[in-house]
Image (cartoon, rainbow, N blue to C red; front, side):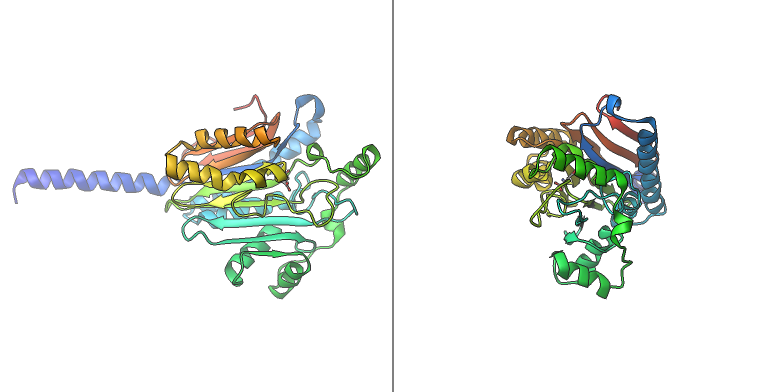
Length: 330
Ligand code: ASP
């Protein structure tokens, strides 16, 4: 073997090792805590501080999983669990009330390698609905369970149960009363912000998405929004990206927001940001406000929203940690 050949082989091996190291380090995590009319004038310092602390804690929970080489799926679940337990957000504890004064929770989780997914709608007693969605994905032959049947499955799976006193908060009760006083039979999309979600890319290059919500204040008749619908509020595909959405669910369902973003990335080769901006503009043209978070197998991260603000955060291997609320923040 010539010296020149050996030198070339050495350089190639080093390049491959460097690429591998870069890939291993390349995890990403993006989270949201809802989008809406979030303006400085309407925010109290206490609420802002609590929301920022909640987002920060969720980033830490997901980061812990990803930094030790854990999966994107575990990371998005860990981040969403933290936000579900935090009464600042409309998911799990702190979920909005239905018109009848109940909490009916929706959640979905999906991983991008096999495109396995699990979702629940209108569940009432599982402390962490995202954990139930994951059980549907892993321990049932189905993708989505709803209502009383989903509550039964949760108990059969031995998941932690919680009563109405865990989910309901004074603030959410007040919002329902205010809504009822204003207009007897409408739900108000601007009173409900706080749906939570996470998307991640792990060090193996796989993506996952998770979303959890109480839905919209004053919802009735078993209404289900986009959050637990695979392709609308939640989607993950290693060939494209992972998306979690928040906003006026009816419009996000009609646009097929999460899948539409992935399709643009996959078939048109658009950047995540360009695809997210286009799909949010199309959703707005239908009348829908809200936002999305996106990350992809290449490590790209993006968010896009057409509301005044969106509770959001991101962190990545070697990257800066960002927590933001208002539209004019980074
Ligand atoms: N998208 C959720 C729903 O329609 C609500 C939200 O994101 O605030 O149920």
